[in-house]
Amino acid sequence: MKIADRTFIISGGASGLGLATAKDLHSQGAYVSLLDLNASSGIKTAQALGSRARFYETDVSSTESIQKAVESTVAWVKETGKAIGGVIAGAGVGLPGLIVDKKNEPLSMESIDFVLNINLRGTLDLIRQAIPHMTINTPDTPDGERGVIVMVASSAAFDGQMGQVAYAASKGAVASVTLPLARDLSRYGIRAVTIAPSLFESNMTKMMSVKVRQSLEKAMEFPKRAGQPEEFARLVRDSIENMMLNGTVLRLDGAMRMPARL
Ligand SMILES: NC(=O)c1ccc[n+]([C@@H]2O[C@H](COP(=O)([O-])OP(=O)(O)OC[C@H]3O[C@@H](n4cnc5c(N)ncnc54)[C@H](O)[C@@H]3O)[C@@H](O)[C@H]2O)c1
Image 1: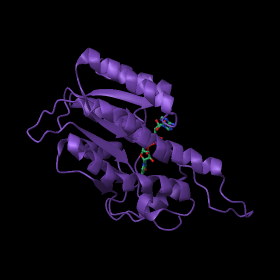
Image 2: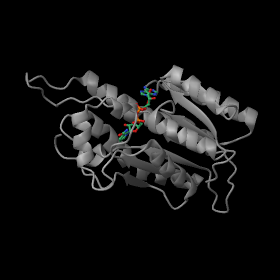
Image 3: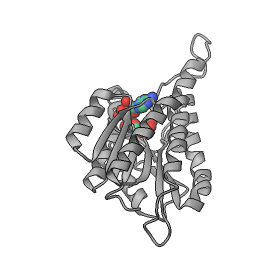
């Protein structure tokens, strides 16, 4: 899939992995539509990128909010003539909690719903609403490709740690929908790829204590360090450009297998 002169919708585009992806795709000539809750960073990012970037304040756990952002993106696309080439669903949150705590209190449904609503429901809802604007694209390759969906899972999809029941459920589900999405969309020439990162530098991981961070870095085989957001963005770019990547979950983890506890 061609990156230049295509519009990419990036949720979570105001920070961390989504922001690095936005900058990278933009540097390749893409138009980027950034959807995020964080308005101050989103506005600043779009201003810094210039005329090929727009920011739409969006809560991906709200269908109406996504609808507004997708409609605004479509209106922008009508002005620019740069069709929607893909969706990168990067918005995500973590909220650790044991299934039952030391006081024998079960994990609250509020905290489970919070994580699932953003990481899983928000991912599917954004894709669901963007897809009808991609199926109508004129294919620009002999294979008839019309677009790419890139989702973000996590190492927790495979080796979730203690306290990660809700997060692992959300990321495991994102990994699981990759193949059925690819199958549903193959008739339109739209691919679906999921990236499962381990520990990467971002606002999410900045909040970790030094002890937790060092322990995770020790679990890496090589390199023994957190990944850089730019290394994530490179794999998004390749997922867009390499047509043979489809229906698969790509681990981007320095061979890290997370231990049960830190
Ligand atoms: N950084 C890591 O180590 C790591 C590892 C594995 C997976 N991930 C996943 O990568 C994705 C990006 O995370 P990151 O590390 O860049 O974190 P980050 O906190 O830097 O960025 C996440 C972005 O999502 C936005 N967001 C949160 N809730 C939202 C909502 N309801 N609606 C719209 N936007 C919302 C935040 O405002 C933020 O800008 C997430 O899905 C995360 O689970 C990150």
